[in-house]
Amino acid sequence: MKKVEYIIVGQGVAGSCMAMKLLQENKSFVVIDNHFHKASAIAAGIFNPVVLKRFSIVWNATKQIQRLQEVFGQFEKLLNKKYIYNFPVYRIFNDEQEKKTWIKKATTHPDLIDYLSTETEQLNSYSSIKNPIGSGEVLHTGRVDLTNLLIDFKNYLVEKNSFIDETFDFSELKLDDNQAIYKNIEADKIIFAEGFNILNNPYFKNLPVIGVKGEVLKIETNAKLPEAVVKGKEFLMPLGENQYFVGATYDRDNVNYENTEEAKQYLIDGVQNFFEDNFEVVEQHASIRPTVVDRRPIIGAHPTYQQLICLNGMGTRGTMLAPVMVDDLYNFLENQQPIDKEANIERFYDKF
Ligand SMILES: Cc1cc2nc3c(=O)[nH]c(=O)nc-3n(C[C@H](O)[C@H](O)[C@H](O)COP(=O)(O)OP(=O)(O)OC[C@H]3O[C@@H](n4cnc5c(N)ncnc54)[C@H](O)[C@@H]3O)c2cc1C
Image 1 (cartoon, rainbow, N blue to C red):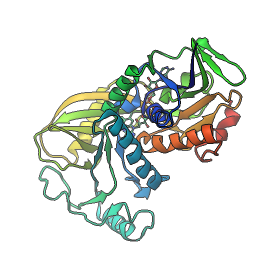
Image 2 (cartoon, rainbow, N blue to C red):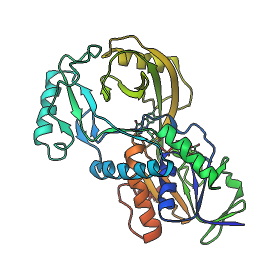
Image 3 (tube, protein in one colour):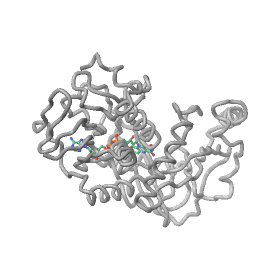
């Protein structure tokens, strides 16, 4: 029998940040993952502390932005590769009123002063971008290349004999008072970081996780574009070598993993709304975001089986949320610290 302190089920951004934390803390663990449509692998990986619809601050943004730089920096160091790309987000204004609201918030709103620039003409030198009223610049933003990070980290874990490539089989799980035994592995705790697939987990399936399907495109163009996210009706994000990411759709009704022509056309129309140059679609991807009724993550222990742990509900912002949620969860598990009550699974104990 192999003994570990933790089994992590799921190697998306949540499970990977958890594994990184355990590595840093010298805890023993194995990761189990079946690579079934992980949302993290197709996500843009954008981090942005400002809600671009309402120009409001994201929940706990400052802490999240700071911590994500540290944690994804640890991945860069461990795997000896660059994954963090710091660049601005430009939000194209729809009308004069939006511009006025932006400037007002950028100069007077205590939560936003650090994040909104009052410069509104940065896109004017790009002839392919329609930007008649200007655009607001969000600061401290960028992208984590989750697609490559997850592949490289998996290879690292395989090399360290800490990765099992399979679907977690619940019929092989035995629970006693303090432990969990899975096949030939004895673990103190099992952390389920399964993304939307948590709804197929017999222990956590009643959690109010709501799938929101997202589709994205990768396009190629020779147009001159800024090293920044440009957000009009949809967003364009540079990937290097004339390739750009276009995203994303939000669909609560057709929750599946299929690429659709409708979404492709919707994204093309959305980007053509502000981008006037030729491009070719080279890839399309779909996955499902694990969102939660009250828009907060769900972390903590199962009410009956305290050795079963939930790390879920990263919603539309896994890049920013995962590092801090992992810290909170680790402090709860190892140092008996309370979990942030807005993210604590206890708020849903009545569902079990
Ligand atoms: C189109 C799109 C664009 C997005 N863009 C952004 C963005 O720009 N910025 C941002 O922050 N967020 C973005 N998101 C949201 C982000 O992707 C999610 O918040 C995040 O990926 C959730 O991570 P996770 O680790 O919880 O789940 P996932 O990434 O889905 O990972 C779960 C993993 O668990 C594995 N798994 C599940 N069940 C089992 C089982 N029983 N046995 C074995 N393995 C299992 C799966 O195979 C998968 O690998 C986007 C999402 C989508 C769909």
